[in-house]
Image 1 (tube, helix red, strand yellow):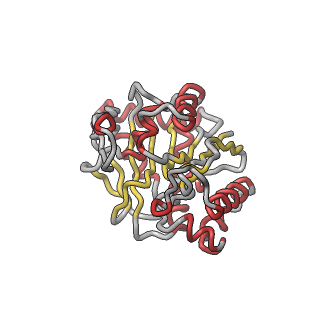
Image 2: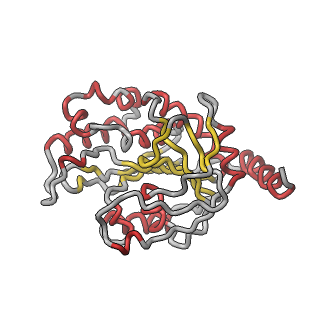
Image 3: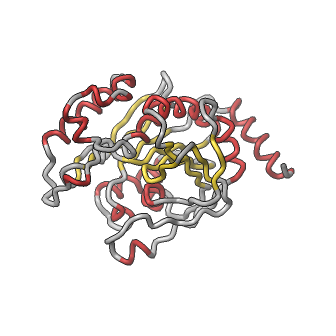
Length: 275
């Protein structure tokens, strides 16, 4: 390890002892990639958050759009911007988010995860679940960004456990963001923007359980009923929420934002945990 990297690790260790409060962690309902280039209520709130929250030394994002076999962490110094969608305006494909990575923070993330073997990744980059939000929060792209993948073979409880382990990183001035959607059913999109009853129901149930810190019920979401099955036909957009709930501290307050169903079947409900 180089002397410069060692000094960064020593600084991180010092911050662990100096910082009494845990750094805020966020679950963001990211919705359409168009939020990256359109000034609407959701993206404007992301801008506001970037101005009002303390500036982190690094960001770790768990995005719905990176599913892998095994748990992986991006370790490249300059992650590429991934345009993992189709059918959108050229302006969106032209978007770049040139944030640097940080191999030292990535190494710390890998070491912090104990319940499974996390491995370094040099191929992925920043997908739109990450950069579409961050380009609004931190448009200067001046904060290092790391992505953590979703192991498609793991159960919701195992994803939650990794989140509990990542709580340690909140002591080190690192912002952890889960990016997905609590309700996400693309087959049922309604361009008239009228929310389905089942979408409203599951969103409200989830908000209540989150406020009550009833994490077990949220992990076992299939037991909630028919609305859960319609809201979560596949769980890659829901799982990032479990990571953020896993790293919640007893002293944390919960605040919701962007509490709205978009296009009938996508919940934009987001939350911040902070103490």
